[in-house]
Length: 495
Ligand code: NAD
Image 1: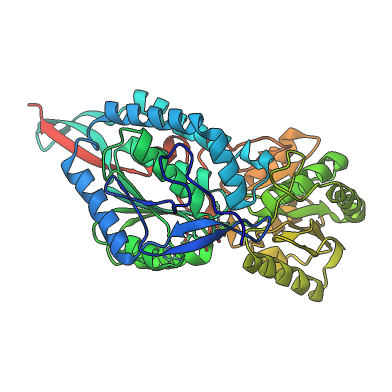
Image 2: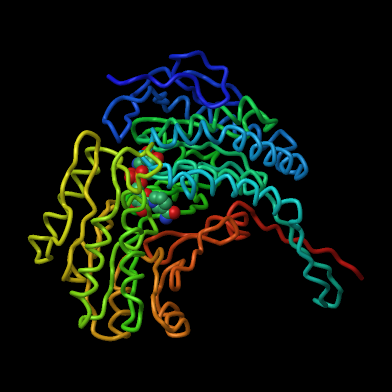
């Protein structure tokens, strides 16, 4: 057994006590707990509460009460102040959160300086600022109808109680990209963290409870080892909106579960994004971009470009360059500032990744590099598969590991066809010496975000989400706020 994590960022919790759930403004211990494992060592990092369905019911009831009986949904000034406070307290405890994030997720330090931690804090700031200038009323002007004059307008109001369910890979990003806009809109929230990375989500709960004026019941936080709590949240009649980030398979279940009470459902799901290398691109630069992208958080990112589409005539030359770059990727201890790639989250995930690589080879792909497990911890070496059939499993299914599939194409039309030959439509990238040509190709790819020659779209003001089976709706940006608003139309008779 490894060391137990004591206390939490900025909490008065005594050493050795497990972190607590947040229900109705109170931090409450779990009736039972389960271990959270450090994926870099395989050792137990700490215990997390395994919430019961009854605790999920209590959290929904608290959120409902806070929505129906407090000023929270109507008091935008209070919400701005609370979001600013939340940003302040997160910033104050950022370095403690960083260490916890590294330990709980296995994300190397470098990842926490981006989407792992620092960028998500900017989302809270962004929604505080957006809310300050946001107009909840839209004038539609006057019209003549049925012999009278009518004034019409639309008021946007909070959609109600939100059930927020997150994936394991970026717990700060996923929690805050749901919490901040939902709170800005005036909703109340029950947030459930992922079973594999509960400690980060629980640390957010403690900071909210102990260091902000967010009223009791407005934010409730649960963690659980199994799906029962999520099932309560997605079927409960008092929940108005479900916002979910996770796999497409779970997303389908959630849509079905939520349909019984016709909830609004927002889904951020899986991806199998393509990086398209046009024949005039700088192959050295592309090789570096492809290699470092696939190894980012060990490939455990929904928007990672895991298919590399290359001109057939240049396939071998590009593969050689990517292999050379992958050989230089430093993996290992995620606490070491020089580490670029950490472990996969669990042995279960590593087995899944390895099985997909083995089957890809059986299906005819060439294993150019990687394909090895490294112990202790759940490490998997940067893996390159070349000559991949675009219809094969490795080209169609999400791996969520550091596995890059290189697929040759014949011309630009063929590249677009292969890029779109996917059930997913989350992200993508195009590289070319001609920005105009790259943009023209990108416009034909059916995904929610596209990077041109390395352009970075990922920021709090940019709507993020997917086409096709990568999801429904957009997170972040103004669109992210409006996911949590209802529109109510009014009309009066002027004369
Ligand atoms: P997952 O689908 O296994 O679990 C996600 C969450 O759903 C967890 O909190 C889990 O406990 C919960 N859950 C499981 N069954 C449920 C049920 N029946 N009802 C309600 N909740 C239930 O996903 P994961 O393995 O944690 O994360 C990896 C997946 O997440 C990948 O597919 C990845 O692409 C996706 N993801 C998408 C985005 C995005 O923005 N599009 C971002 C990050 C991760």
